Amino acid sequence: ARLELADKAPAAAADLLGPVAQGKDAEAARAVAMRIDSFIDRHRAVPEAETQRAADFVHLLGDGRDSYRMRRAQILGAASVGDFDTAFAVLDDWPAGTEDDLRHSAGQKAFDILSRVPDDNLFLSRLLPRVAQARETGLGLNQQIALSERLSTLGFGEAGASVLDPPA
Image (cartoon, rainbow, N blue to C red):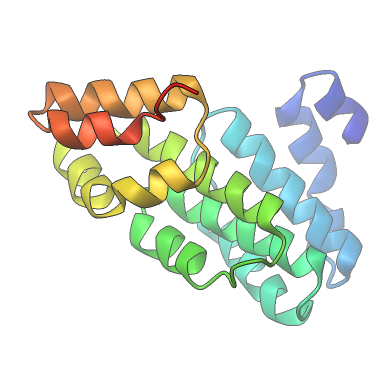
């Protein structure tokens, strides 16, 4: 499955990981996370059952890195279907200073998914209260520009400008 992912064949990788993801051990958790990443990489909605398995693994795996990988997967799964309330609640509950690389990655991906939501009302209602958080996640330049332009186009120029990092 990892070879399929490396060869940019995420759909095939997701299929290969399916049986492994049905287990209840750390290897199954990694398979679930990889399957969710393959959906996200293809800009597809993650099936609810996959997101729920990620949430279940958070509790099964305790407090180690694998558990935080599953939190990231849960956040991305929820965001992929427009459930930003759940995605951001899980992100908000993430203890500061714990697996920050995974937390930032989850935040960046969630805001990236939000930037592509076609419903302006959903986009605004979820982003406006979190503009500062979006900036703090270390968004890439393209993400900053996409969020800023959309906010500005929708009449929220000040919020749009605040998403952009000032030049160094």
